[in-house]
Image 1: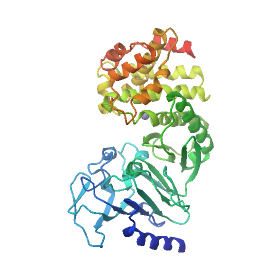
Image 2 (image 1 turned 90 degrees about the vertical axis):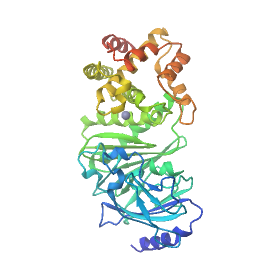
Image 3 (image 1 turned 180 degrees about the horizontal axis):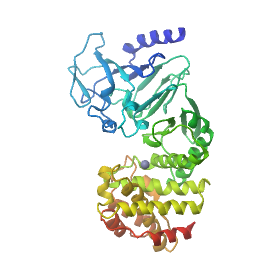
Image 4 (image 1 turned 90 degrees about the horizontal axis):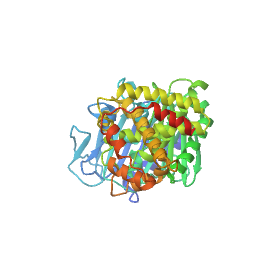
Length: 450
Ligand SMILES: [Zn+2]
């Protein structure tokens, strides 16, 4: 208790005078208020003031992340109150452009709303502590490359986050920039955590709930192996530190936020659930490469983001011995059926605008389109090439920093350049068109490759 007091005083003294860092956040949580976080930020307002706007539509709520804010106040460096007017769209407009101190309480009630898409990409709490995505917890001002985040927590709580530590208390962090603050997840509490390295990256894992905790060694292994396989497939590692969180939630599912993978599992994890869990972990790991490419229009390419993740995840399950060849073919048959039932009305490219409403067309259809492309490349190149040969070029050519964005034309051009095979007809007929793929011969061809 005494240590906490000292830190509070230290932080209070430090905030106004800290000139080294441009954005500082202090998060305080009291054990007797397990669904509250008190945040104090020392930041400069951005173009729109002080905002909570990143992926706010993910909440499914009219007022997005700001729904959960309680008592926001702003003061200038002399401690004078600054007028902050809410603009109705996630931002507070200030009549000052200089550095301010913002204080607010964030209520963690996201998982109490029944209709939200996924708590794993928002926030959730349990008797173990709290999980937040950075965008749900931290207010955003001017972009900054010098950020510190400090936590004042109950004595038996710890922090797991994909950020480098500052000092050795385990409670102060120096994220590389503001994007790393908002596009990350963090777990605070009495959860289980582990840390390991792969190449230059440090990988932080956090587990809460009996099921994920009991399976942590296996999950680490599955995660690490798939990270290795997909690094080889893309001939490139991921960039920066990574975090993986597995917690107990209402529904089984997972998502990727920047370099964070967040997954929820219902109750216990029996042996029979492990292949499903492994499949979700591997699918999300694949997104660490393809979710952030430079897309001309991400919606048109969702069939690709999800379809490729689905396709390559299945081969990774096979590689790790989690699925046998026969089971894999069975899974493909099942997905072909789902695709056939959904296809013919709307094109995969168009369906991306509402990807969750057209789940089978995007996920199963995307997987079948990938199968068609892979088998077409294999056949036309007389067995010399597969889609895997295109992945390194796809990743380097359409990385975030590149000028030419990824769309169906540039995608077809890279395939042709790497394999000599023209796939534009397949894309035109089955991805932008509504023609329905005949999957039986593709399945037969796939069986011959296993
Ligand atoms: Zn996905």
